[in-house]
Length: 145
Image 1: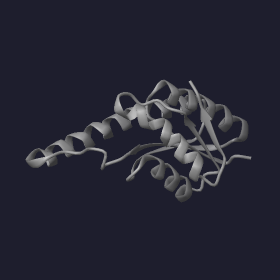
Image 2: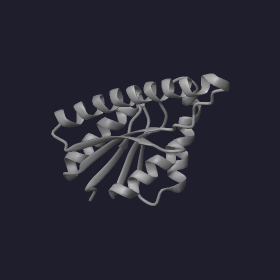
Image 3: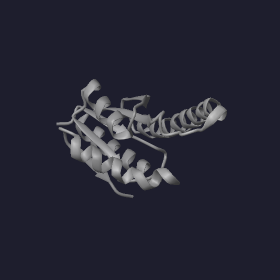
Image 4: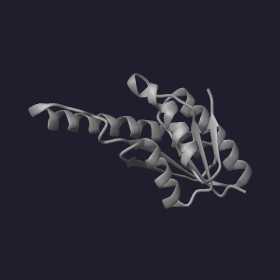
């Protein structure tokens, strides 16, 4: 039924709960999983001469956070015997990065957490899930922690 599952992760507990649900589905249907971490390179807003340095620091930190989140998800999926690939995606908005990846890799299900990031991003991630739900043309499983 579901041959290819897209799993956006962010390292939060809700995201890890989504990983567990994706494992169950992938094992039941023999699915492959593509786990992604989406970075909005334009989320950082700097001013003056410090902008370029601050932007580089932001992207480095976001990439490191993404690599860690993907490493944790891939370890769980691999340990469960699920075929997984991972990628860090850059997109103007997180929900668009998710949907564009879903289209480009040909998934037939998205499994994602309802919310999860910390700090300021926590306020908007719920809206990311809502945006994915509003714009997607394929099944989505939204997982709550």
